[in-house]
Image (tube, rainbow, N blue to C red; front, side):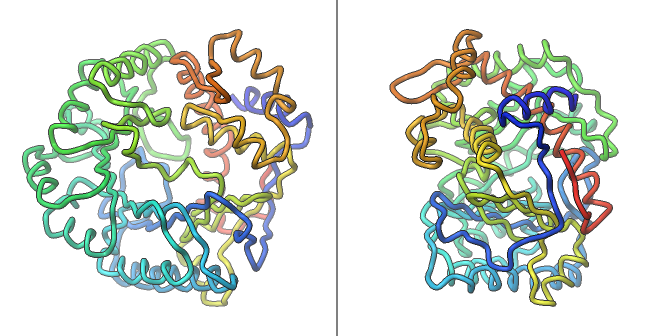
Length: 417
């Protein structure tokens, strides 16, 4: 699979040079110059470990969690205090793990963030279904949370059993959500599970909206090599038909598509920590994307805390982009929204997208992957599927390799992709 991503990288960057991540970083992160800057905070604790989950996580203990949150708050101070004035940012997202396990300290974290940043589009948090109680939701609302994302994965018992998840009481979920208002109530599902049918996925979607969701995310199952999952991946043709059929169903019901995997009851309802031009990441395994660099924090919690207590950033690896590399990164993640605005590209890079990638855009139109409306390149259903298909290659070739190394080595010397 790495051959596909390697050839694509060489073609689009016009270079044989690999993406090289080195064990280095800047003491002061140059984020002041960045527009459309988002914030992400990683809380890695879980009450149990799902064998299909690739993210950085450990079993919860109160002592370790408090030690970690102390370091996390200090990391925010280190980065935020390096700027002379408050920086306006789009949003703040808490991911994990199960962030609500640090619920008693969320207000403290948010207050620290507010010392250095002005959040304009709200604060989101990921929740386990068991977190969705009136008491917890009220606590989150009082802390300033405006958006929630609930990791359902599936309401079906046969898939809950495959994924090692407990049953979800939909009526209890609905009751709790009806009592506390959030701007966005998103529910996450995994699709392309073994023998999963359109009816299976449609039933999950219908139940989600019944329970109070106004936003749905359906993420494809990806078989990471370093997880202990025994779930078999669905074939390409089956996956494409399932994605096309559920997309058509969303459109039939009047929902809008606001990214490759997400659908909402209106264009103003959103939940995504991914589609930002730039972002700062805090916490172990969190990534930071700036104008000319991308960095990733160590995955090891003890190493993370130790580094912070030395008043050093917990960066494990950094890549310094060439201009072409940064363009590819920008295009890849901007396309996640299913649209690329040519004006935004020119504003960010100072050159037209047609000048840099005119042939590739022409080819994409010929193959029926995109259409151009005004100055926006928009994916067709076919294009959206093949974006997903390529992302699968990308994930297994790049992310799987990098995370597989970093989960065992807190500070690798270098990784080439």
